[in-house]
Amino acid sequence: MKPSVIVYTSTGCPHCHKVKEQLQSWGVPYEERNVSESAEYFEQLQQRKIFGTPATLIGDKIVLGFQPAKMMSLLGLDEAGKSETEAEGSKSEARNETDERSANGASSSEASERSIFRQADQAALNEVYDFVAIGGGPAGASAAVYAARAKLKTLVIDKAPTAGTLAITHKIANYPGVRKQLTGLELLTEMQLQAKDFGAEFIRTNVLEVDFSDPEIKKLRVPEGTIKAKSVFIAVGAKAPSAKIKGEEQFAGRGVSYCSTCDAAFFEGKSVVVAGDNEEAVQEAETLAKYCKEVKLLIPGTGIKGQTQLSDLEAKPNVTVYRNHRIKEIAGDQSVERVVILDAERREQTWPADGVFLYLAGMKPGTDFLKNQVRRDEEGYVIVDEQLRTNVDGVFAGGDARKTPVKQAVLSAADGCLAALGAEQYVNRRAKMRPQYV
Image (cartoon, rainbow, N blue to C red; front, side, top):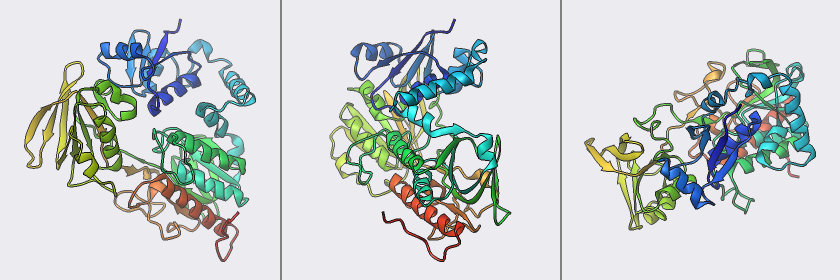
C-alpha cells in the first residue's frame, strides 16, 4: 500500500508547482494544503519547525523543497516513476492520460508542458532539421517562433523544461507587451505554445556532446541516438555554482529559503538575513521588510549589480544594508538560530537570526558539453559576434550561453530572434537576413 502524501504549498511558489507536477507525472495522488490560505495548515508546519514551502509529507517522512530522488525513494518508485506492480502498461496509461487531458482542453502548465514536449523518438533521429535550438527557455523558444515561421524544420531540445531560470521565476511584471503579472513558467509556456503553433517540435532529452566537424550537418548526441541539423542555436541556461554555505542544506526549509513570496509569512515579526548582490536580493528584502521585525541585507561586494538602487531599501527603518559582508555558516538546533558572518575586515561575527534568504550571484553557463567544438571564454560563455555567430558556420549562441551585462528574459528572447533570422539566412544561402515584419 502506498503511503499517503500531503503537500504543503503557498500561493505563487514555483517549487511547490514542481513538486505537484512531479507527483502528477508519477500518478501519485496527494492532498494539497495551502498555507497562504489556511492558518491551520500554516500552524501545522510551524509546529514541525518548518518555515518554508514546499514541504511534502510522505507517510511519516517529510521532504523539504523539490527533491524528486528522495520523493521517489520514499514512494517506492522505480526510475520511471512507477512501482514494480505498476510498471506493466504504464506507457499506454500515460499516453491515455495525456490524450484525455488534451481532449478536455487542460490549460494548466502541467498539461501544457506535456502537450508541448515529447520524448526523443526514432522520427526525430531520422530527420535532418533545418534548425535545432539546444534549450527551451526564452532564447530557444523565441528562436523557435521565428525559425518555424520562416518555414525552417525546427526542433527545440530541453532536458528539464520547467527547471530553467525563467521557469522557476515566481513573478514577471516587466515583460514588454504583457501588462498582467504572471509567473515565469506561464510566460515561457506561452512562448513555447506559440512556436508549436507555427510548426516547431519540442523534445525532452539531454544533449551529451556535439560534433560540428561536418560543414553541412551538425550532430548532437543524446541518450537515444543522434539528432542531425543544418544549423544550431546554443541557448542553454546558466546555473549557480555547486558550493553551498555550511549549514545551508541542513536548514533548507527550516529557516533557509530562496523565495520571499513562498515563505515571508513564516517570519512575521522575526529577524532575517538576506544575502545577495543582485536585483532579486533587493526586491526580496523589500518584501520581507513588510513582514519582519528586522532585515539585514548582506552584499558580498561594494554594491548591487545592475541598475537597481538601494536608497528606498535603506530608508526603511527595519532594514540595514551591510556591504562587503558574507555568510560563513548557518547554525541552529532544529531550525536556524544564528549566522556566522565575515565582515568587511574579514572578522567573524555571530548574529542571531530566525531565517536566511539566499540570492547569491555567480551563475555559470551550462556549456561544458560543447568542449572544444566552439570557442568559449574562460568562464564557459560562448564567444559570438554581433549577429550571434560562433566561429563555426551555421552555429549560433545566445541567452545565458553568451556573456551579457544583465540577464533578462527580454534580452534572451531578442537573441532568439536574431539567431533564427541568421539561421534562415545560412540555411537558404541568402545574401542578407530576411526580417519578419508581420
